[in-house]
Length: 419
View (cartoon, rainbow, N blue to C red):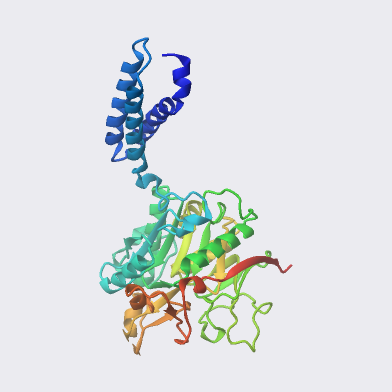
């Protein structure tokens, strides 16, 4: 074949080489439709061999046939998608990964007792309506945990032991399966309609606190050096040595001050909040030195290793949330914990007996209507609207306030240094 023919039909030859290389890649990762590409590519190269086996120049009809086969290969390739490379399972580090079905994490797990079908029903529908993929991890009855398996010094009530073990099981899975990052929900978790918009601001703030440029290429959209993102808490401590804050102002998802239910002395908000203002719609992202409650938290592979070492392989005698608190305080592990205040994940409570709201502690009385704490535009409370395809969602505390998803997620942050 003359050189001029090769140059005039580079697309065909280059396409063949590309298809062959891509075929090898498909075989390596095991994609279901690789046999389809194999068939097209084999035919392509056989025809190409036949065309070049003689010294005569291929006819225009032969070249047209080859181009048609190339188009078939291209069509087959374009239709391929492998779970191993899906943006939902292997984040690229782009901020847009937060829009995928695992919110930019590799996995999402929900801890839930198998017997609590009511809770599983609830969070399954919440996740589905939020376009979130999650996996249930069975909660553990504490009285079934072998005492030999407890860390040295542990002496807690069975319900507390069971909660601890369930978290250890998730952490163990993350470590054993080399999962780079995971978001862990408890089954009463609730989140705002604008959750993804919140997480984009969290990612910007987390990168700022990791001293990483916002546009820097990282494996995770949240940066690569964090150990824990404590999103669902009921109280946090700030790290005294780090006065940096990522400040999100005019955020509709921030609870009004009067409705905030937190159990610790929380971050000082006096720079932005004012006693005379009942709204106070500022949220900050900061380095945490600990907290309590575990409605939702994200943990990296490195963080999971540290947490397992701290709460299972070392002497430990506390509820699991105080274990995470100790991890963030422990200078030996040098864990980097980042948190928002107010929280970004809350808890929902269904109408009916309060005893349904916990598998750990006893509660008396009744909820006369469903409630959601530490959210403002609760997914749980707006579930009917989501199911019906509504584009406006009601505020937890003022039903006259009804906003679109875009309006709910309008808060934008900026860095500040208070030192």
